[in-house]
Image (cartoon, rainbow, N blue to C red; front, top):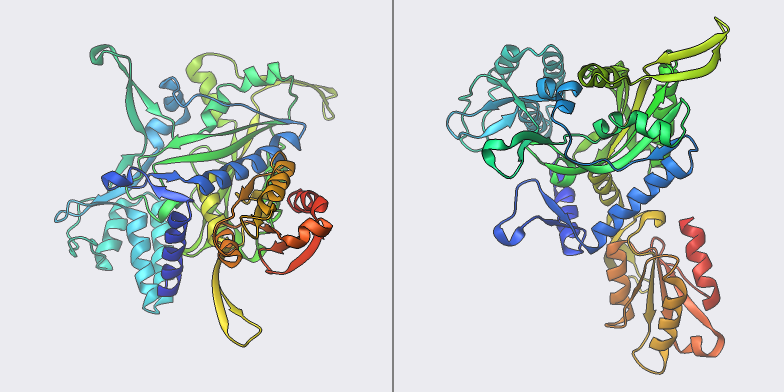
Length: 488
C-alpha cells in the first residue's frame, strides 16, 4: 500500500470512529483485537445494507425464501462439511518474537513493502510464486520462499522461522453445564451449513420447486491468525448468503447467471463499475467445481467482497452420508431425452456469499471524500463528505429550523412527524446552519431541509443536496416525495 493510500485508509478509520460508525470493541479495556462494535450510524448503515440485500433476494425473486438458523449446530455437521479436516490455514511462528503469522499475509505484507519501494515487478513475481505454492500445499517451498526473500518478523526483525503447519480456524466451546459431561461444539465458521441441513424442511414447507434458493443473514466466527485492515477481516463477522439448488447438469449456466446478477446488485447502488472485477480461483475449495470472487478496489487494493461458488452436490451428499437421512428431491418435470420424469436426485448448489462487514467498509471507503470548495469571493473552504448511496444512507433527511424561536421549531417538528414513518430523519437546532450542514455531510445525509421565516409566509423550505451542495426552494408538502423518489 502506498503512503497516500495508507493515509487515506487511516483517515477513513478515524472518521468511522469520530462520527459513530465503528468503535473498537471493549475500548475502555484497551480493546479486543479484530473485534468491533457498530455505533449509531454504522448500525443503521449495516441494517440498511441487510434490508437492501434481503429484499433483492427474497422479495424480488419468487423462488428464493429465507431462514434464520441457529449459530450452534450438532458437531457432526462440521465433520460432514469438511471443516474439521479441511478448514485450515498455513501458519508460521517467529522463534524470537513468538508471534504467529498466516503465511499468505506475511508474504503479502512483504510484497506491499516492495511496491512502496517501486519494485512492482518483483512484488508481482513474489505473489505469483506464493499462489502457485499454496495451490500445491507446498509448505517446504513456501518456507524457502520466505527465507530466500529474507522476509522478517515485524516485531523481532529476524528471519528465524518455524516450519509451516496447518491451523484450524474454528472456535471450540463446550455444550453442557458440567465440564465432565459437556461435549465439544463449534461456533459456526459459515452460515451455509444451516441452510443445507434445513434443505428438505424448507423445500417441503415453502413448497419450493427446483431451481430455488434459500437466503440467510447471520453471524459467523473464524479464529483468524492475523486479523487486519479494520473491519475487512474479523474474528466475529456477518454473512449474507444464498444457496441456490439446481438440477445436476444445469449448474454451469446458473453459475454464470448468479455471477452477473450479483455484480449488478453492487452496481445498482450507484457504485463505480471500474472499481469492481472478477477473480477466478486458481485453487478451488474441496467442495467447488467453479469459484470466483467479486473484488472491489479498497484503499489497500483489490480484495474480495463476495464469492460465487459452484458447490456441486458435495454438501447435501455429505450430510446424507453422515446423518443417514435422504437429502433427495423428486423432480416431476419431464426429461426431454427420456420422456420420463427426472425423478430423485441430490441437487447441485450455486452459492452467493457476501461479507456484510466488508460491504460496510466498501461503502465507507467509496463514500469518503475530503473536498476543497471554491467560494464566490475567491477563497477556499473544505469539508469531509460521505457520498453514501441514498438508498442505504443512515439518515435520509435532516430537518433544521434556522432559529430556536418564532415558531420555527414547531413547524420543523410537524415536518418530522410527517416524514419519520417513511424514512429515518434527524432533527437539530443547535449551532449555525453551516456547521449543521457539515455534520450531516460527515455522516452521509443526502438531504437537509431548513425551516426559515419565509416558511411561515408561503410554506416553502430550502432543501440542500449533499453531493452538489445546491439549494432550492420547494413546497414543504413536496419534501417527503422528493426523498422517497431518491431512495426508491
